[in-house]
Length: 318
Image (cartoon, rainbow, N blue to C red):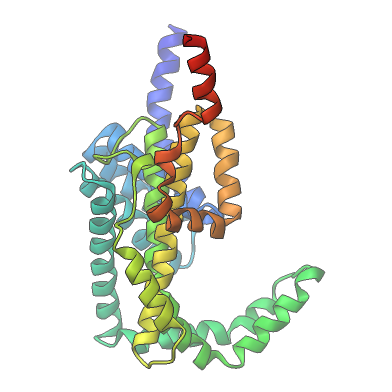
């Protein structure tokens, strides 16, 4: 009987905890990229109907916890919408790149439509005004915050930045905003695929450790790198956005190489976690592995017997 009660409470508590976990991750800021994962897991674990209930429950929880309507709105756009779109598209078991492209494409269309509606057909001016207001309000926000002594210089630089809000905001919107949104979605969906795989839920038709970016992207990388160093009114901002996205793509390819290596060496989960943390601490090194994989093909060299091993095996056979 106690065992039956234990199973009953486990089945009852797990669905209730998933929306709460998503809200906690969203409010943690550090793990905000993981906020959609519990909702996506619930969608696959308990089905579409309960998955929709989880989405609504998490939004209601966020509305109860926050007095400002903006936070639940951001939660709706960047957690619930991501969880819903990814859950529906991933049921088709597409290749990794197709799954990412379709999911991010649908999300960008939704965000663009919402932005056009809110801005009444003037999205750039709307985002620029909101950005200027936020940057200009930094001195007032920082005055109410207890900043540690070692961050005082950082605080002063932000206050100085707020005095030149207009040019900084315009440059950020033109050169970085779109890239940051796409890169954030890329990292969120990639982490989701990795976590679901560890929970024995496969959402792609190919193996994550074998994933490789298309070879022709290297030409786009070289071209955007060159144009980003020039000063051409329209082309330079576009090139900088694309270059940032390509950096993240090659970073993810570097992680795929690491995943292949960890699986080949049969590392434990703790060893893999330490390895991924180190790779995240040194993202430039991971990106270099992904970029130069086009010529070196690291995975093809893993598992090959060394000359010493071949010599020892031949002596044993002899």
